Length: 132
Ligand SMILES: [Ca+2]
Ligand SMILES: [Ca+2]
Ligand SMILES: [Ca+2]
Image 1: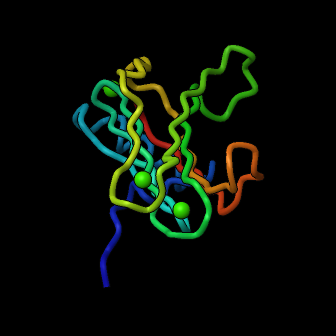
Image 2: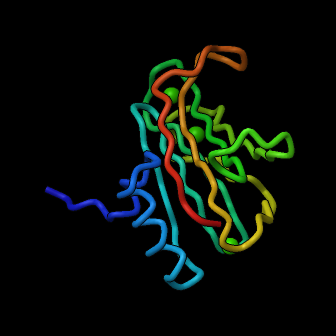
């Protein structure tokens, strides 16, 4: 049995989540976060803010991910970067080819899902919160 790091459990705006966030904010600048669902995995690298998504199932679904900031707000100035792995479950992931450039310390929402084709409905959606 593999013990998952605590940061993987950041998912809801509960008191537990807020406590864990405070710990993350106080930790060194480099920390990675990842979120997996059936058929896809997303990784967020907070150094320079990089987003990567991997298709992990041969299922006629592509893998997508997004990072949204600031998190937990309906702010009209919200920004989103997307990543999409369209060449199947072949070990070749897609990474956004530039620094996304999010202000240091800002909480971000990282989501992953799969869908059938470019216009399919999102399936197996999962979201975590972490710090840029
Ligand atoms: Ca950063
Ligand atoms: Ca797939
Ligand atoms: Ca791929």
